[in-house]
Length: 85
Image (tube, rainbow, N blue to C red; front, side, top):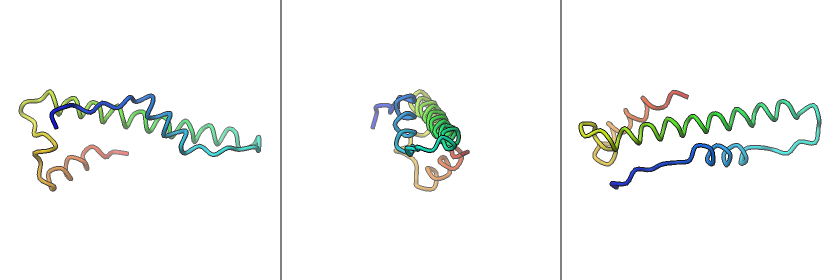
């Protein structure tokens, strides 16, 4: 795999937030539902931003090992370093 993967952060975040949203008819639930939607949107957006940045580094660095060349242990270590959420 020599082509870099790029995910559109806005499209991904909207899709993710929409998939987790639950319709509410109770006016008291509107603000908590909006906060939850915003939390899901922002989490997905920044996760994709981080992914795209790491993916770009992986394809621009000639000294860094590519994902496909890593052993399972090395890949697991790399993912653990990225998983800060």
